[in-house]
Image (cartoon, rainbow, N blue to C red; front, top):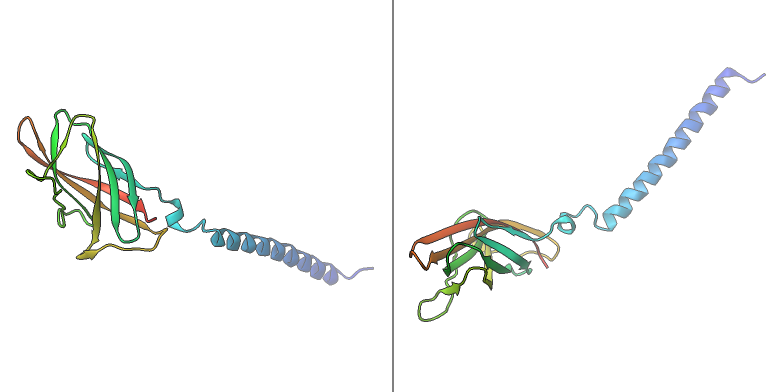
Length: 164
């Protein structure tokens, strides 16, 4: 006859052994996923730029020295003259770049036209820089003048970009 305490001990050992193997397998899977970069937010983030109605970003590209390249699509109701643009980590119009396009230093954009520009992004009071694969969240500022009315506008949109 088998002792009841021995059956309980054997059952407890089988329980511990089974769950130990399960925990070991889960740990190995988590380490493998971490090593592959699944938990790195830079791998999950896609670059996007969201501007108010009338302007949109066709393409966004950010490099490690903080220089962002944006292809801007003009879809307002009238032609515009692009007068300045900037990129900041906070929602300000600091560090705006005025295009060098004599004689007026403006870029003329017809309805449905697009323009590609590059501008330095700023974080706080210094130029932004980061390692490739990291993510930048900030704002794009665009100043323009409606050519029909002469009214100036400033629009600020959100920028999320993966550093390449």
